Amino acid sequence: MRRHAPAAARNRDPIAAVLAEELPASGHVLEIASGSGEHCAFFAGRFPGLIWQPSDPDADALASIADWCAGLANVRPPLEIDAASAAFPAADAILCVNMVHISPWEATLGLLAGAGRALGPGAPLILYGPYFRDTVETAPSNLAFDIDLRSRNPAWGLRHLEEVDHEAMAREFEPARLVEMPANNITRVYRKGRGA
Image (cartoon, rainbow, N blue to C red; front, top):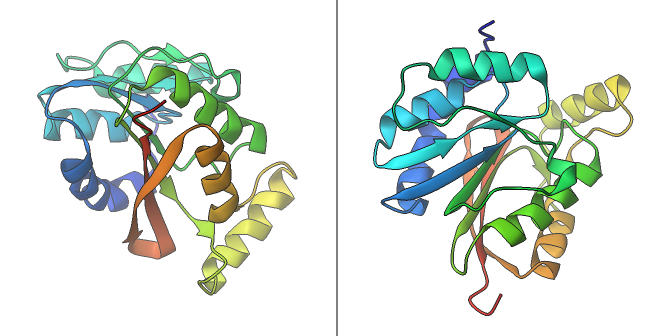
């Protein structure tokens, strides 16, 4: 039942360092595309004052999430959520790790739309993963990763951060922070507009 994502052990501490600066002290965090559940279990331990709501559209992933998070008092049972559907429960923050490039573009648009409805003014939407950036030379490893992803599914692939920013701003999110992360990844923090 329990899955393992090798990257989770490598990136969880750097991501947690950013979350410590961006998440509220209390409230509900919705994780979209929780995958194996390892991140949710780890972050729930690091941030016990928050209630964590993991989710994923895949039944095997939901079983793995439930296994990883069993016994954690501040983690709710995982929800079956397809990011493209944009039907999200209300939250005080939304986290999405490594989904944008391993899903169709419609999932990213759904993520932004759903976050726009689920979050209140000033709340963070936090994305982690590899991106193309207009002003930064793409690392050879990311170029190879993009080719590999598209060979597996033509609808997948690294996205241009500027395009994601454009779609986020169209839904009244403001790019608040960009953090360079290990292995040529970034964390992008958006904040819901106060007038939204």
